[in-house]
Image (cartoon, rainbow, N blue to C red; front, side, top):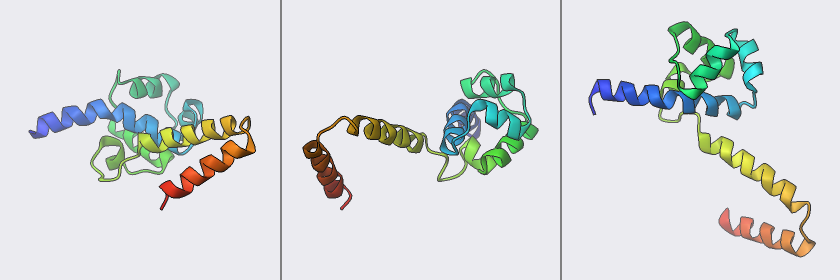
Length: 118
């Protein structure tokens, strides 16, 4: 992959990385806008991939999200993971659903989780 192709790929993935980083720290768009001191329209367009960030916005978002700019643009080996946010969401769903399960089902779920974590 050429440097230009890598740059295009990074630009396309920026929106996913930004949204994942925001969700990983538990911020709404409104909260991130206030912390990063950017407009709601700017953040919305960045998260939907309509626009690309300026240097100042990139750095401001990175500081606000407590991640490196490299993580947001995809240069880190451990970028903000959308799977972490998805995992949190699934665990929340599981907790809500578990409230309606019988004790027997809960014991089975715990047993499965214990086996899977070994």
